[in-house]
Length: 170
Image (cartoon, rainbow, N blue to C red; front, side, top):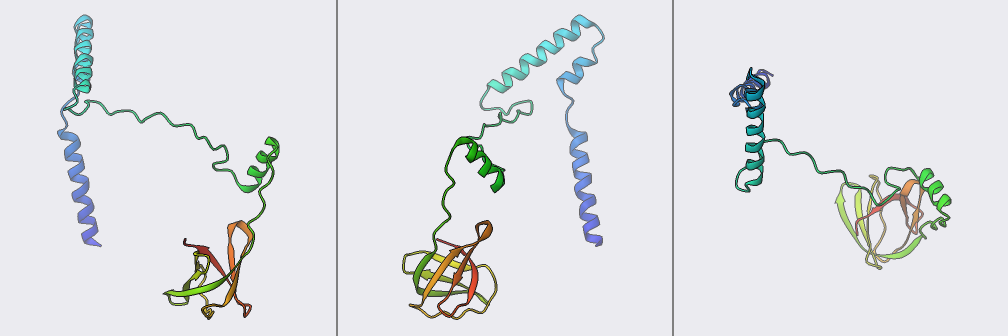
C-alpha cells in the first residue's frame, strides 16, 4: 500500500512540475501590455506566428487542434432496440425479416477448449462454441440441430436431447 502512495506522489509531482515549467503563451504576454494599440499589434504578431507555425509541416502546431467534425451515420437504426427498429421498419413499409432457420448438421469434430466447454465443427464448415459450462458428450458424426432463441441466442441440441447455448466462431 505504501508503494502505491509513493508512486502516486511521484506521478503527481512530475505532472505539476511539467505544468509549472511550461513557457507562457504569447497571448498571455500580449494581454499584459497596457497600451491598447501595442496590445492589438502584439496579438496580431502572435496570431501570424501561430498561423505560420501551423502551416510549416515540419513543426508541430502551436495550438491544440480541434477534433474532426462528427461524421453522420448512414444507419438510422444504430442505438435502437429491437422494438424501435421494428417500428421504424413498419413506418418505412419494410417487411420484417424472417427469423433464421434451424441448422441440422453432422458433427465432424469436437474441439475441447476449457473444462466443460467445447467447440463443434459441423459438416457445413461452421464452428460453434459452447457459451455455458456444461458436460456435453456428443459423438463425431452425430446429428445436431442449432436453433435460434430469444435476443440473438442460439442453442445446440444433440440427438440425445441435451441442449446448450452456443455462439458461432466461423
